[in-house]
Length: 431
Image (cartoon, rainbow, N blue to C red; front, top):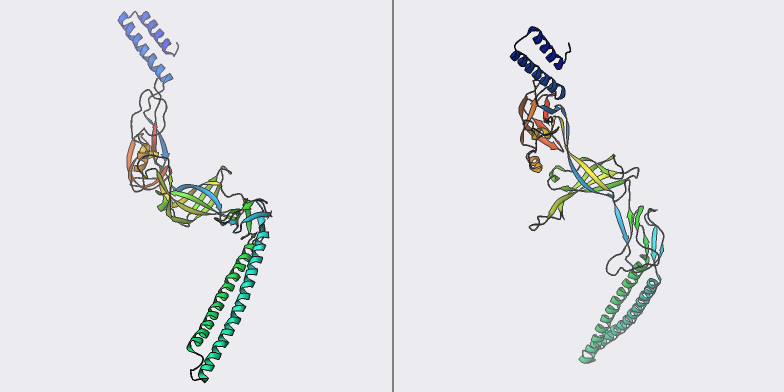
C-alpha cells in the first residue's frame, strides 16, 4: 500500500468494501483522508507556521567615534600673489607654470625706458633746486652782512644814522633772504624725494620672487601692458611649500561646538577613490559665513550658516594638489568600550506582519524620518527590544550617550553582551 494520501484513501475504501461498512462511514472516512491530504499539501508548499521572524544585532561593547563631516578645498599653506606696482609693457617673462623659484629670482621685467627718463628728469630737478638753494644762501649772506654794517654805524653815531627807515629796510631784506633759503631747502628735499621715487619705480620694474616655492599660475605674457594706477595687477601665483598644505572646510552651525583645535581628522578626494588621508584641526574661525541655499520665504530664511575650520595636511609625496575638493571626517569624541546599538533598533515597534506583502526587513514606516532622527539624540531616552531564547520580545529602556552616523552609544539596566537586539521584522509573503 502506498504511503501517499491518495494511497491511504484507496486503502480505506478497499477495507470498508471488504468489511461491508455502511455508506455513511465510507464518506466520513473519505473526508478524513481529504483533510489529511490538504494538510500534507500545505506543509509541502507553505511550510509550518513558526511565528514572526526578526532581524537582530548581537550586542557588544566597542569604541564609538563621534564624527563631524564637512567639505572644502585644499590650499597651499602660504600662497603669494605677485603683482606689479609699475605700469608699462612687459618685456621679459622668465618663468612658467610649475617652475620652481627661489626668493629673489627675477620673474619678469617691465619696460624701463620711460622710467629711466623719469629718473633723469627728477635728478635734473634736484640739481636745479640745489643751485637755487645756493643762490638764496648767497643772498642771505649778503643781506646779513648789510644788516650788520647798519647796526655798527648806528652804534657809532649814537643812533643818528642810518635812519630808522633805512635800518628797517635792511632788516626786512635779511628776513626775506632767510625765507628764500628755507623755501629753496624745501624744494631740494622735494626734488630729492622725486628722485628716490623714480629710482624705486625703476627697481620695481624688475619683478622678483618674494618666496621660494613653485609657480601655480602665470597670468602675463611678453608684450602685455599692465596698468597699476588703480589696482595692482596679479601676474603670478606662487605656493611657498606644498609638502604641507591646509584644508579649509565649512562646518555646519549645528556641529561647530563639537569641533576644536587639535582634533584628528581624515579626508577623501575624488582623485584617489577608496583612500583616505590624515589631517588635524589647526583652528576654528569664530566668524560665521553665510551662503544661500536657494530657498524662498521670509528674509534670511534661505541662508545657510557655517564656520570655517582649518585642517593641516601633510603632503610629503606631493600627491595632493591645490584646489582639490575634499570631504573630511573630524573625530569630535571617542567613547571607549560602550554598548553600541544601531539607530534602527530604536525605531522598531513590535507589530504583526501585514497580509499580502512580500519579504521585508527593517522597522515599520513611522512617518517623517527627519523628525525621528531629531528625537534620537544625545541625552534622550529610547526603547529597544531584545529577542529571548523563547522567541519573545522584551523591552529595555536605554539612555543615549552619543550618536554618530547610524549608531549610538547607550547605557541602561539589563544590557548584557551577546543579547540579540531587534532591528526589524522579517515579514513572510502570503499567497
